[in-house]
Length: 459
Image (cartoon, rainbow, N blue to C red; front, top):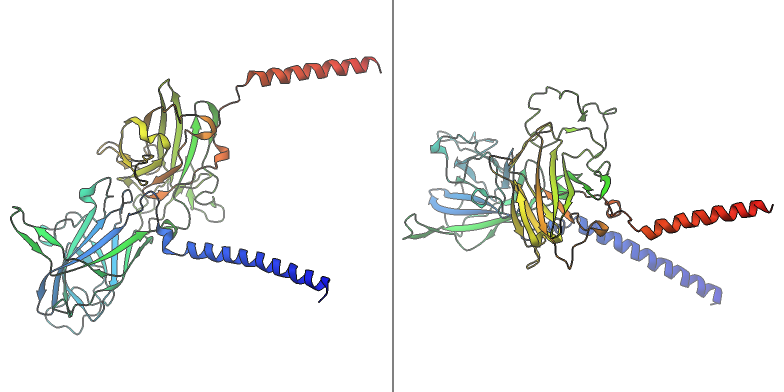
């Protein structure tokens, strides 16, 4: 083999290795994008919704169970139109009756005579009952229209429950088969549920605290949320400004979509024009599809962070949330902000505050939400569609600075969804206040003028 052939083989091998590395990288990126790790939230690593089935008693052909949905997510709640729970029966089970919830379809129950089941479908779909349901159709923690609060914001209401009587099922721990293929919708996709798993039976304390009873059988289903599955585009963005720079950094253009009123009339509402009087225009559609005001960013929610004042020992920031969505009033809204100075926040005005410590002892993440009956409702787009507050921070001499955008947040969430921030190189920077540099430029200009005049005099 000649030297020319050896060099050719060497070049081919090197190109193959380089191409292989690229292919391997692409495969890893694709695998990561479509793996369950896409549901991991670094600010709420243990957040999930746990669905617990407790069999409370046996019936002649099945069992009576209480199904409880616990929202263990710190800041992500389920808002109107509420949750929708589905599964597939393992055998030929039917639902005889329900309390606190109902299936959306009865299915084919034609083979039954006399006592007709509530649902005969192989894969039932269950929804919560609405507020105002008669008391004889309620159980504890039901009938809120499927709305579940977040764990950090309102732990008492971070639960929903219903009772179900199942027939044509097993009548003992050995003959009961666990349902499968669980699905959870919260106004749309986003949640992925794992398989049902038997766990230690639940125990219940009596009202007087003197007796403990327990379920006959218990299994859990864990559901986790992924923003990538929930929507194709972001739902919120962040704009920035400061007292030391006149530049206002807007949300990046086309963050949540681009204006397309020419090709698709009615895709957004021009500012100042009347809102189309479509029935239900100000109520959430089943899939929460927004109708937004025409803006360069086209996001339903914009969060503006303004560095307002600088004191000797403190500094102040103003936060404004603006709703551009004509189809949604955001009740029990919340936002999460990550900034290193939250370990020394002094005072908040008109917002509730709770520190989150996803990294153990590091306190750089805060959850903010409105005060009940004052600003806990972020109204639809329009003059009333905004809420605001100011935050007062105490300076840490070791870390505080306004240089390089330090005063702006590192990450912002609204209702659990990650908001898009401007690129760091676009942040408002401190103005260049160096007098020697300006004097130097002036001096160079004068010297250049004198030299030019001197040279012209001798030409």
